Image (cartoon, rainbow, N blue to C red; front, side):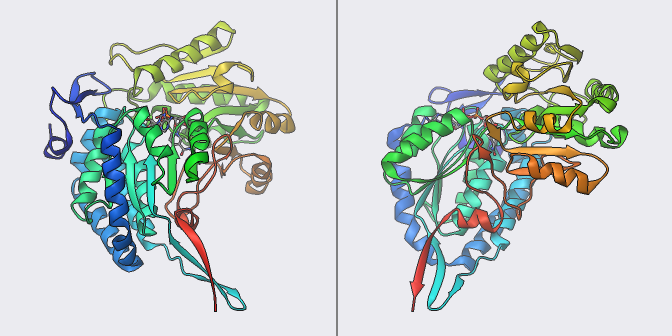
Length: 458
Ligand code: NAD
């Protein structure tokens, strides 16, 4: 156990064991915190908030940069915990990403707006912000929540996913070394603790990243405390490959748009519509890459793909592939677990000759599987791409950027990428439409989402 992990892990007799996603060995123990710990954390956050707000933007930004430097200094230690409990290759990448996002939030300029006449619009703190996160990018997504909230003068109580609490506790420990007491605290608990946090009357705002089903519950509970919401929910991103696409030129980018983090990405490419004229070539190019992608423990940096993080997600992936097979879809490569690598490894899988209506197309797989769907009529492909309830991301692939941009205009998604998929940037707003949620993160819009507006007329 590294020194950082040792500072946050509970004892074996009081904590809940957290397993290495690849080996299923115990990594450490999550403190079992309760609703009464939550009460203390919210009280401390409320007490700390006025003084934190009074520090002003320049001082808060300076402190965020200081935390970023310390995260970088501990990137290997923090990254090791991420690799252990999440499974991903090179977990330190999340630590570096977290530092980059903190600096991004510190750098953005958000001045009061002159509205003309006698009116000015100011962005003022909300109070205590609750952050509830998922297990796929535990550290990175925690910082996506915490950084803009702190920058705008709020304090934060974070409830990490019960699958990946240790890396978030370690991250918060680094924050706490630099910030006044109560400004950021973590409460490691289960879904009940999450529900109690979301419904708490002391919370002014909830930023939630997770499934659409949980998002709906949080919306319902916000009727009681009127907490403002940013909801980053599930995705089922479609990609459309146009008839004149250069298959060899785009296949790498396409493959990693779907398989990055072993497919456990909210805005991964999850359904690919390919024109008949290039369909067979595209399926073969993707299958070659899937078969060749090195999969194994995230501790071996030669690997590019790791395990599925938890058994229930593994079962979802296996069920969706088995259902596709039973419906007559063609499993071009993969289509089965890889038990020689560990219990939660599933071979990178390309599924061809599959149609909308199959669960692997209509539902979010969140794993290393890509269904490739043939189309002949572009309008029909656009209609099918828009045919699910989600609207997080989408992409269009073809050599003519104007033609691709015209298709992008017609896709129902918060972000549409052209000849790329899934890239995000601290300065560029990101968020979903339809059942993928509402509210924006990142950029100046992300800061505004962590503030109340106040008009002053003089
Ligand atoms: P999940 O909804 O099961 O859990 C997310 C968090 O919510 C956990 O911390 C959990 O303890 C908590 N929670 C559960 N029930 C709750 C309740 N009633 N009230 C409050 N909190 C509660 O999601 P998951 O399985 O951890 O994550 C996978 C999902 O997250 C996928 O659907 C994926 O697409 C989505 N996701 C979205 C984004 C995005 O930016 N849109 C990013 C990553 C993941």
